[in-house]
Amino acid sequence: MKIYTRTGDTGMTGLFGGGRVSKAHLRVEAYGSVDELNAVLGQARLHLDREIGDRVRILQADLFVVGAHLATPETDERRPRPSLPPLPGDRIEAMEAWMDAADEELPALEHFVLPGGGAAACALHVARTVCRRAERRVTGLANEEAVDPVLLRYLNRLGDLLFVWARLANRREGIADVEWSG
Image (cartoon, rainbow, N blue to C red; front, top):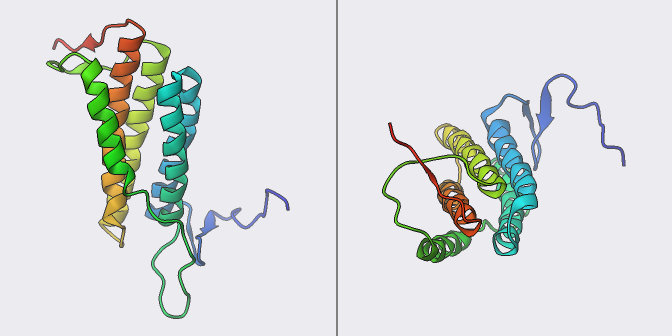
């Protein structure tokens, strides 16, 4: 099987379950941003401790499922929707528990924090901003087409988690958060 198909040479791409759309379509922007987030998280794992890195690996698998759902529009009776793995809705509670556990190690947040610190924290801050962009793209798609609300909750919680983990990574490395003093 070859990687190149030449079917996208005119700026169109195929969706899972059938149909073709522009590569600039809101749906493609949404799942493309989730794919970018997954890649950035893979890069971030190079700098993370084992606990956070193992959890990020779990989230990366979740993001494949999220992307698959985004790449599969609702279908009609002429074309059945392909079978997809279930959305990771239960992971939202796990992410909240991970944040609560991290908060026990962290000082109270009393100021805005500038992105920065050690390599792990910086990588997590970059992932957080990519996550927020993915969330905006999925929100844009949801404004136009049917999108399961679990996707938006998942991405929102993930952005929060990446912020908390960036702070935690700095704390574990003995690096103070850089507080904004505007």
